[in-house]
Length: 354
Image (cartoon, rainbow, N blue to C red; front, side, top):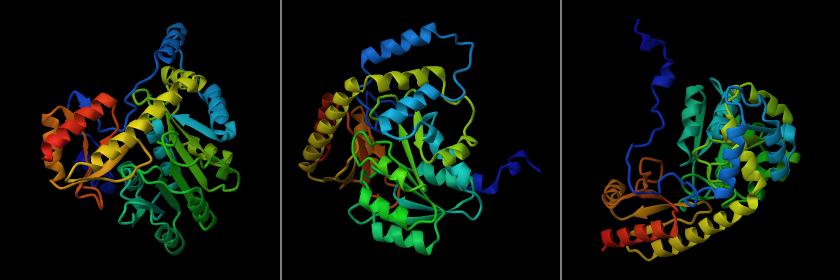
């Protein structure tokens, strides 16, 4: 028997999440904060890191960070779990809940990592397509939860890649009528969408995931966190690797939370650029941007997405071809950049769509 035969068949059957290794001067394909981290925060993190004994492990449980996150979110510290990006939070929660026969509801299209991790755990995926306008189909989700006896539902709000959101009223209705867990990934919350933390007080089946990678400009440092009932956090912790959050990233998150006054203006700039870019894209014949609450859009294109992708790469701009996702065969995804980057993009698109 070959060594490869020892790998689980359902793991061998899936394709790994990956990105093409293409390098361009302007990168607007990963929904990053284009304005970066303020120098004051960087300098304080570097000062603390230089004074730390690198031979020592970081805190086993990042108590200070959990307390700061509790203050920031309005939730209790024993209901917080921080780790190596929200992707680790996704993996830990799914590992704790999903096995053979467990039914997982996914609105589609959405972040493909959810399906990948569910398949690794051999769970059964129940897909519910978005509406034609790429908004959540709430009646269909509610029916699936009831009829299909869903164990775990995962809702990304704002949704990646479509930017649509679920309202607090609709989420509460789903929570009230579900016997399973509902996981809400709010990676882009600070940019758009409603705060669902108040619902944690009344619904023990709600799990909220968030990240420092987007609005907090810390994509390179990988810090995410989970908010849930303390008894759930206790179980999720068993599925997270020890010391997964390194000292440098942990410290950067703490300092960022101490300087939210410096980060909020950058979020406002992103929101302003999002709205400006959306209006400008609407004026280009052959493109139809869809409304988004996040720092990206899916855009319907009159020419094949692969051709538009290549044409922009030739002009030094990297976007995301999402045409293989359900419902998005004519779409690309464009992240919001700096004003200068957005102007370069618009000029290139006007040249392509003459």
